[in-house]
Image 1 (tube, rainbow, N blue to C red):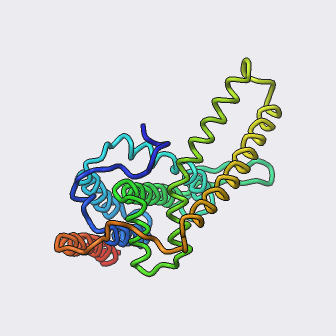
Image 2 (cartoon, rainbow, N blue to C red):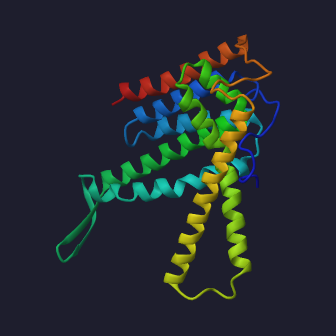
Length: 260
């Protein structure tokens, strides 16, 4: 798997050849359309999922790599969504009374949790597809041309670029700890202390790396404006793709709102 390498996966597919500005706006529009869907709109979610799968098919990227990347974020979303069945009012399905604590799972809560998980997975899927089919210089140039704040453009680009570098660094720390440890360790407290030291070491190394990178960029004349040898240009196929994608998203949202 390529989780620890560059997020961009080179290719010559129709999705790779689209204008980066179109891909960024299309991804944002897709996430907005997802957010507009009410809980339990399963057919609309299925339609948007079909759109996402079609985009992945056109990108010709390996499915297992994209699935692995989306799986990294899903556990965090799942932890947040777990509380929804207990706090959403509705028809009770299961209840537990433990002293003063009462927990009740409702049908509406389960539907809301499933909807949140589906929306989150599709949003992450499209975001992963965006960075996998768009190189970081092209993405930065697209954000700059879309008039986003320069500091935001640079921060997002560097975050995407060095997230995988930090993952490599964390993996090396884990390997070094395993090489210096015999057996399973002494206990939970000992493991927590070791983990805390590893996190602190990773933070210190990250800060030092950031300072070195910034000094190297300034030494090479960096002034906050992205520069590239390959300027992006809007073409006819970008217009066709934009019209088709926008019409599909608008149709799904409009039909969902009409049937409410």
